[in-house]
Each structure stands twice: as structure tokens, then as C-alpha cells.
Amino acid sequence: MAVSRRAAVTGLVALGLGLPAIRSLALPTSRPWLPRPVELASGEILAASRARLPFTAPESRGYGYNQTSPGPLIRVRRGEEFRIRIANHLNEETTFHWHGLICPTEADGQPQNPVLPGESAEVAFPILQRAGLSWYHPHPHGATAKQAWHGLGGFFVIEDEEEKALGLPSGEDEWFLFLRDIQLDALGRIFFPDDAGGSEGTLPLINGVVNPRAHAANRQLRLRILNGANARVFRLSADAPLTLIGNDGGLLETPVPVDQIQMGPAERIDVILDLRKIAPGTVVGLRDDSFAAPLLEITVREGAPDHWQLPKRLSTITPLVHHGSEPDRVFTFQGDSTINDKPFEPTRIDFAIPFGKVERWRFQSAQGAPHPIHIHGAHFQVIQRSGRGRNQVEPWERGWKDTVLKWAPEQVDILVRFDTYEGRYLLHCHKLEHEDGGMMLNFVVGKDPEAALEKARIEALYGPICTTRQG
Ligand SMILES: [Cu+2]
Image (cartoon, rainbow, N blue to C red):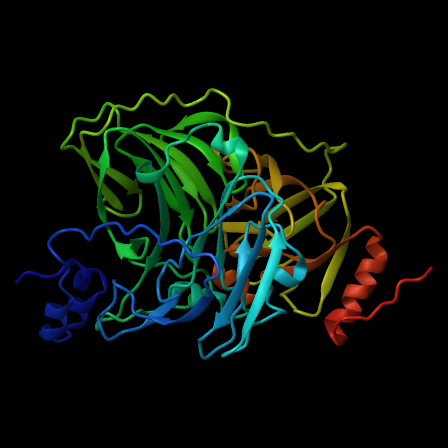
């Protein structure tokens, strides 16, 4: 008896469930085509709702933005104002968090500012940061993992003149890949295991389909990859040369050839896949260590000659400077649900950071790792990884980051400077079940840190304070 792959991986056969379900679940003999994310049109509303997703049984529903998962790609230019109307058509509260975007507290989509079912709202803030690949996703406290698992997430691309001047592969030669994983039940419906230690799937998804295929010209391809999984760490490699050019915070200073890249949840990479020496007709795989079949199969075909040369220098990263080797703050990520022994409380603000000051932070943990650690409100620079483990800053961790992956007994030190907005921001684990479990805290940034902390603590309990300017 032929057993479909999906039936095998969901354990259907082992459970001895009925044959009709198996037949209806049989995967197509060939891989589905890789979808390109649609772009959000100017003035279009971004709405979260239930949605029909291509990898589930036809009658089953996941979640999507504007009925798609990943949602529409948002593209903006540095210096513009980003303005959008968001709407919640779900039966539960959600938020719209612009991950990697430096924006004011009220626009940041934090758990304390939910969009209730049936509500809509206007979001606007200026794009002050350099080009790079960010993304958007829900951030409601206690339900982020479930909503992301069901399909909520999308790309957010910033462009600028510096990047444009490099003439990087674009159009047909620039691909956006939203990686994640999923589990289906015996009937082909989304099954959310809600594992406190992190939910992992049995099926890999790229742009919302399982194990896709694509065609590419024998040129240099720019792959812009996001790990949008709840908890899975991807270890990516390819059957053609890969050169890393950027990450969460935009371009690196110089390109770095790499064999394998380890990506924790929420991390992004920008890589050049060089297909120039691949014979037309060859199938090139993009692979992950955990899955036997390639995540993506690319059939190479003859294309127009590619004369573009990858520049030796891509950008300039000004290192943050901090005097002294001791951390200003140490954060211990414990088990599945605490930072420094405390689970998240929406109304508790843990500390205040002086606006514009460079601080050295240390992340450590004994168990529960890997922890992909994310900061809102600023980008940071990874300066050291020590303790047992890798003992090095990886090539994809150079430059500017907003999320860094930490395995247990590693210690990771970063330098960070909050110099764009004052306000309340979050530090949390981006393994979404850890985040929902409470591995998250609030802090404030202020020019007068003590006053900012006092104000934020009162506001967290009683709502915004109305102030009148003196003098
Ligand atoms: Cu964690």
C-alpha cells in the first residue's frame, strides 16, 4: 500500500485511522510552485482574519493577513512616513507588531495595546532606519504562539539609496522566503501542539507551501530569508555557493562566503546564491539539517548573462563604544517562562535606560535553550559569545541585529543604545511559547530615566497621564 508522505509524518498510519482520510491527504506527485508574496498596495487595509491556506485540507481554516499567509509584503523607503490602517477580523484580540522597526511605543503593537475583535486603527510613524528586511506579526500576550502558528506574519522591507547604489539582484532575481514549520492532524487541519518548551512542526513551509520548487536563471540570486517559525532553529545550506550580505539590521560591511547558516526564530539573512556556474537543467536544493528533502528545489535554466560583481565593501557599520568589560545588566533566561526569576506582568516595568547611553547587556541561561532573544526599540551589536558552546560571534551576527540566538550554557554580550524614542519597550525570548509563557519584561527609555520609570509605572496601572508643559 502506498502511504502518502504527509500521512506518514503525521503518524496517521500508526494510529490506524481510516483510508479515505489518507487518500484525501495524498501530496501531489510534484512539488508546488513557490509563491511570490503579493505586495500591499498603497492605502490598502491590513486585516487579520481566518483564511483558507493551501497546505491544509480544503475545508480547514488558518489565519492570514488579507487572506494570505504570509501576508502581503510591505515596502517602504527610508525617510518616508509609514501609514496604514490595521483591522482585526478575528474572534480574539491581536496586535500588529512591526518587528525590527524602530517606532514609538504606541505604534509598536505591544501586548498592552491590543486591537479588539472587530476594531480597526490607524498606525503611522516615520521610517528613520537604514534598508533591511523586517517583518510584522501578532504580539498579544499569551496568544502570540497560536496566532503565528496559524499563519499570521508578513515581510516588511525598507529600501534606501545606499543599498540601491550597490545594484543588488532585483526583480526576478530577488526572492523573499518566509520559512516556518507546521503540524497537521489526521484530517489535514492545522494542529497546534502548544508545547511550553516550543512548538515544532513536522512539515517545513516556505511562503505558505510545503517543500516548493521554482525556476531560476543561471545568475546570482538574492535570497532574503526570514525564520518565521515559532521555535525551530533552521540550519541552512545550498547546493551552490552562498555569500552572506546582510541580516536583521541591513547590510553587513563586507560579504562573507558561508557553508551553513544557523537561524533562530525571527532572525533574517540576506544572501547571494551564485548559480552562474550551474549547468542549465540542474536542480539546486536549499536545505535544512532536520529535513531529509530539500526545503526548496530550484531548477536552473539559461538566462541573460550576469555581469554584476558583488562589491567588496557593502556598507559602513559604526561600532558602538562601551568602556569596561563588565555588563551593565545581566538577564538570566530560566526554564520556559522567566527572565531573572520573574514571569512577564504587563503592568510591571523592570528598569529604566538613559536615552542615548551605550549599555552592555549579558544574556545567559542554564536550561530551556535555544532562546532567540529580541529587543524592541533599538538595534544592537553582538560583541561576544562565551562560556561552553560556540565561543564566537557568527558571520550572520555582525552588523546590526534585533534578535540573537543563544544556546544553553552560552553567554552572549551585546551593546545597545536607545537613541530614537523615549518610551516603554520589551525584551523577550522569541521562541513564541516562551514569550507567551512569560519570558518577557518591560523597560523604559528616558532622558530622565527615574522620572520616565515613575511615569511608566503609574501609566501601566492607571492609563496615560495628562501633562501640561510648564513655563
Ligand atoms: Cu526562550
